[in-house]
Length: 248
Length: 270
Image (cartoon, rainbow over all chains, first blue to last red; front, top):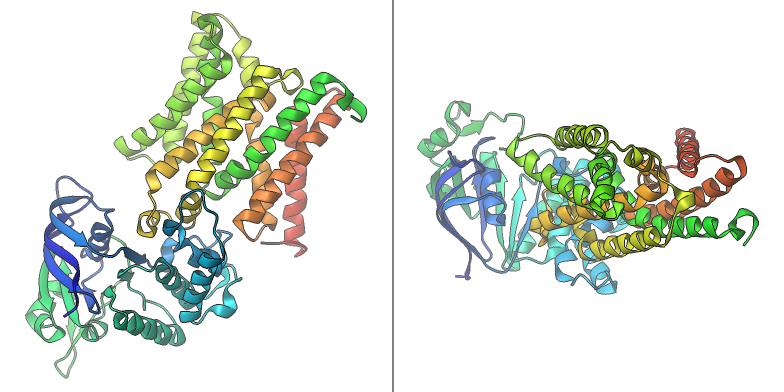
């Protein structure tokens, strides 16, 4: 069993003093483990990530993260008109490791280029971020997280709206990161995607379930997580009605 | 020195432009990329009450302006959070308040219109050693802020709210940017006045944005444009006896228009 890299106890967090966006969240993630954070839009997945990053105020509870944390947001947060290339974006992952008085040098460029190579974008390093396809942009943001070299990686719906090639490459990279002993938390509202993770955290403001897919993805937990959004397929397996995404 | 630059007042004006051009490169680029043009205009115009009270209080006008600019920048963040106002709404609200206070002070309390001329038009051809020293200090502040926070400015501009996840602190960087712009604006007031402060801190940068494909190239081109437009404006203003700030604004606008048309025709483009 690898060391625990993320430990959350009875977390209550949100942006309003009066009401918490998430409540009663408690789980642990060890190195080499992937956790699917499953819930509907507005259910608290992004708030949980922001709480882990220290951006959302904790009203109570405790969050402990070991070995640094990197975040791969959805590409809609990025400005497509900003004059940065794929390499410039990947280089942002090295910023924190540089003291303010040191310029970006060969070591940082090599790290960023290696990160782009891992996501299959070496040939696009000079391409302006806004000119890339949606899937390529998502891979550039993953490369930025790789260049950050953190032990814990949060990914906000990394397969949402990406093409098949990008989805395959992203899946490969996530497998590699897990094999390297990093802890991955991947938000999704896709039950089928969540089944591929080591563990699943179901959340709808309150934590509904946490455990292996077999333990967490029960009909009862899914009904509580999704409420009326849950649609049962004729063969008895569950499918989810996917809404347009909005950050909570 | 060729032509009009053999005169000492023209040499001082030239030195002022030489000091303002790198400020435009560093901060103008961020103003354009972070969409702070209205803030830049607002903080310049809001210095009015500081300029009005500086004379009667016996303090240098730049210090009066700087105090108000600092209060404006600080109040903007607090007002935005407290009243949940968008940045431009908070800027407009504070700008109106500052102008109203300035007008009351100028007309009813001190009965002096001296601050109005200085605020609106600047006086590039009457730049003295204190003004040059202040612009030099503003350049040092701008360079220092960029050394500390340029990476956070770029990361935060590209993806708002992401700096923390990259191991950087966004809030001090954003405050540092607003403060450095406020200092630069006060320095530029002496040269071009509040109405035209954008001519040196905004127009060259938005022109460079049309052509540049990277932040570094945008900074370099902004500095070069600010320098060339500033020197050309000085020369033309001397020859035709026109206010240099206004000439610089017209020149900057013409270069911007030309670049925009060139992009439209596919001749240049980022």
